[in-house]
Image 1 (cartoon, rainbow, N blue to C red):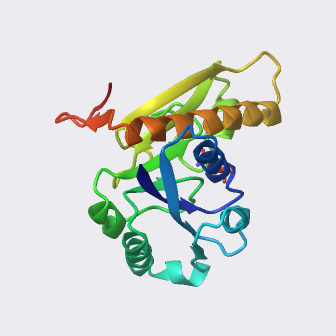
Image 2: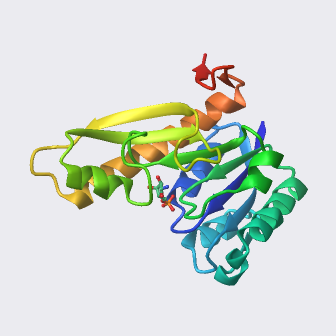
Length: 201
Ligand code: GRF
């Protein structure tokens, strides 16, 4: 069983998918702490409803990003998290977190990285007119959206498809692939190799 500390900023549907997979016995993990970068994130309600300790940082606290990251690190270490799981966390994770949880910070991104990094992966792919996009799960490092890739799933953008429909299908993939990938980690099947590529066995 692995202990997860989740970072989020918004609706928290990926947190919910993780909670549901644990309940269903599909993910051998426990969410020990949720931290939001926004006090009004609905993800905090989800944590509360699932009985998970949660807390929020205020905008003002991010005026000093290093201090914010130190606070998050202390809280996650105090909760004995093994992994930090970013689930719609709209802030960079900095040195304090990345050092304390070296190679144990995981992010989900709604495009096939390295294409369309940044805050609008789905829309950017849609606007570019690519025919295939998808979802990436990767270890986070100091370079935004560029850490070692653990898993990816592609999908074809249908002729004439709306952005809303694409978003819906991307999110449906996310909600399957995130818990499934975390389960591979729980089973000890995910390793970062010397060349910094990820081996999944
Ligand atoms: C997801 O699309 C995720 O890939 C991106 O932010 C979104 C978070 O959604 N990083 P939610 O808060 O989990 O509903």
